[in-house]
Length: 359
Image: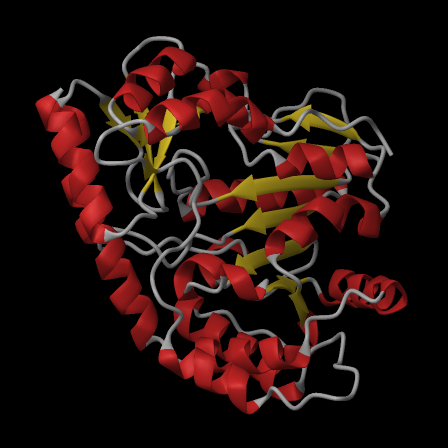
């Protein structure tokens, strides 16, 4: 295992303390932790499956695999064999362990990215490489390439043409592409983000391609640790084989809850509307306070800048009782931005907006 970086959130502690000193309390917009209720249909399914004395299936129940395949078909028009999908114990677990599970010696990821892509490469003892938007890495060969659309932290959505070029580039070189799509259902325009497995990206051939999806954001299931990976049947079979040996199994009640969530689209529409309203309010307040906010098409975050060092902005916000994440957590390219989450209740978002407007 390679050396791991210091856990970045520890460095935010003094700013959190300053924000908590605000007379009306802190508005914590630093972490994308859902705060809204888990849908009733999901909670009922979990409770009904609570009597689970036996070991669950690592591959997932037939009902769960069918539900995953059905959702991929409805949402993206993807035709996939249920045998080519696999539930995981929250997608952070998969992101962190995928290079190890695949035996990858080199891993590429964007210059602005979820830090666990780099951590996963380090755990595997693999070489981590920042890869630019044109997938130009010079003479280096990559075993695994991460793409993330919609992006954390920026909210940027990669269009089908871009994803198609990534898939073609990777196939020519024998690179596995893992597309982190956990924010794909949280979009705020008419055009819904596509998947790396979407027909307009790769036709019907999924070789060398994996799509990674989380239930945490779309269904408020962060506490359930529920996600899945789908795509290349041979790669998924390899992951399943290793995960069987390693005991990486989603608990049976959680599998039942996932099945219910994936069969119900209505709760996702409701949740997207909640975030859209919060986004509208907070986006306007940030712009009124002099922030430039970029790439707001999708996701749970407003990637914002005052054109100063990100820690100065974090401090400025903390003085107003608002806690945000410094952009440097996501790579050196984020050193003049902060990531502001939409994951607070309506009243706390309104409080943050009021503080910004009054600033």
